[in-house]
Length: 440
Image (cartoon, rainbow, N blue to C red; front, side, top):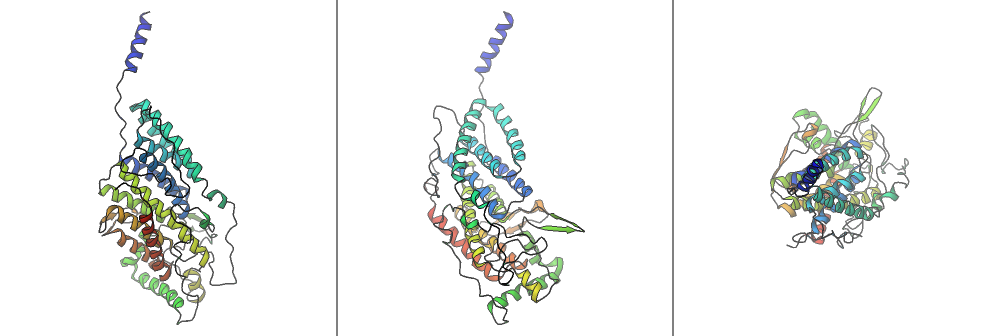
């Protein structure tokens, strides 16, 4: 009898225990994004696919926060095909910030290959949150997973699954003006059907179709030939300067090619690098921290930036496989110097327009709209990969450097850089004008 009384007293005390609220901070969200980026690098996702991995988890998190009312407005009816997410159960105690982070992790888990890595990370957080407040954790988790399923169903209608079974890029070896695989891996063209992916804000994939590239010609007086020669001459000049070359530093800082291959004897292996989108996600993190953004503001910034970059990749890839332009490396090896190698390894897809230029242009417009012009920052995104911090006076200055880095790296002609940057900025301005994410 005495034992039963002790048990009853313990149960009564447990039921009356007061739990503190679960506090979810901006750093918790940054850390989750960072973890996903690390897994993406490990799994080697292409730049377009990486943009898809960023955007849907951010949208899921943002939509949950928008359910609170107040400053932030739902994207329902603003992005293609998205309708209102399910309402939470008002009778339950829900931590919306916690739900947003759980939804982000769950969507990310579905989009990467190394699922076990994110599950391990997620479960470590689950244990902490559940110990802090079991009821609120369970309620918040249940709602988060419900929203995750809803966003997943919408996401799976974006044609990505269908493009997995479409034909590979067809190489035309008889037309030297068309793209051909490049050394050292001679990989097939990446994502030739990415223009079939549903955009989020654009009215059509070709809405920001750039002007055509200069007409292909090997006549020394033609614009195309002069731009080809510029790539060759620039590469030779800065290579001769060696380690003192600022241009080489810029090229390496903005490389962002997840497909870089290294040959050692008979072995070939890939080195780990982030994508262009991941670099700008890193810049978004830097800006949020410098501005002391709260949790909701942080999710808002990530979401708006990732939406712009997602549509920017669709717009860029639409043009890449339409113009289907040969890379400088192919022509320089054929007509100038068969031993020449670009400073950066040529990525495996057509040349025009420059993907980094388009995405950097779009991201710079969005971040300028959020954080303001002349927002200086120290970009330490590449320090984990052995590269020094670079300082920029504005997001536009960073995007301009990212764009010109492609010339220094020997992988793009000037037209692809300049027209690509314009393409991205025009797209970014359209998104700023079209999306209404706040009540201000």
